[in-house]
Length: 113
Image (cartoon, rainbow, N blue to C red; front, side, top):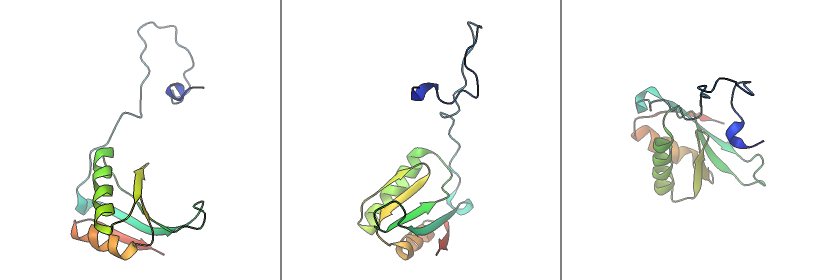
């Protein structure tokens, strides 16, 4: 089955020629202000061949804003990483530094041990 036909909420076929499938994946919510968001910062090494990564979760907003925040964190920590599915992944243990950076940007942070 192709990816474009995956999320149709159980509708397999319609005889209505004017029927339009609703695409829920394209709906993006507005990005909340930094003061209204609480980002969780944790250390993760599961399914990563024992390598440690800093995982920032809980971001609510558009994908472009997530990518911008990810790029800012990667630049200020001088590390590689990625942003996908609402999470930011930074290579290495940078929990304290990421918490300081996000706090200075106005985000509420929560360190998870």
